[in-house]
Picture 1 (cartoon, rainbow over the protein chains, first blue to last red):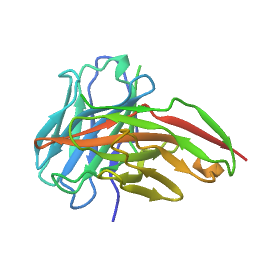
Picture 2 (picture 1 turned 135 degrees about the vertical axis):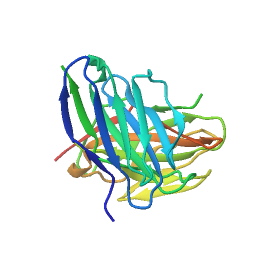
Picture 3 (picture 1 turned 30 degrees about the vertical axis):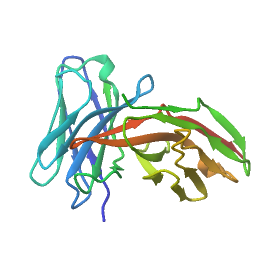
Picture 4 (picture 1 turned 90 degrees about the horizontal axis):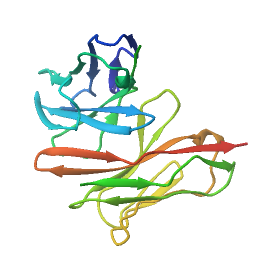
Length: 113
Length: 114
């Protein structure tokens, strides 16, 4: 069974631009969560989707948004990029609504210049 | 709120040495506990987990026991290898209603020298 895939793996943008990252969960998994990883702040939760509904949201500004499609694939969007948005963005999937075990993808490395 | 406190790194050991990485947590409710490992340039891989008090998670020679009385989940390995060099994250997972919350520690960089 294929793991969690994320595209693109690397991305370079400039301040003020917007970006969309994509995540395909493990087949059959319906929960997708997003995390931001930076050297200074560590791993921080962005949001979680289950069956196309956002169930939980972390403490990030409204510039960060996401959605989930009927096939469970998810996208996250960051508008008006800032230098501080440079990070590794990780996506994780879980099988059911209350499965504790999450499986992570390799991440998308976003660099904002 | 929920939090995870991990032993500060970096940790440098010689091959075949004994490893302990301390992890303590604060949570409202009864969390599940995890150790994840991250190799350079990669995402997180689940190393082991424990879902209730006194459970012991184990994998690839690593072990951790869920200690409710001390709110701890320390990671141990009896004999580390160079290939164990990575960053290790302790994490807890709780549900608040239907919302899943996974909280990570700050990570501990482990380097194993031959």
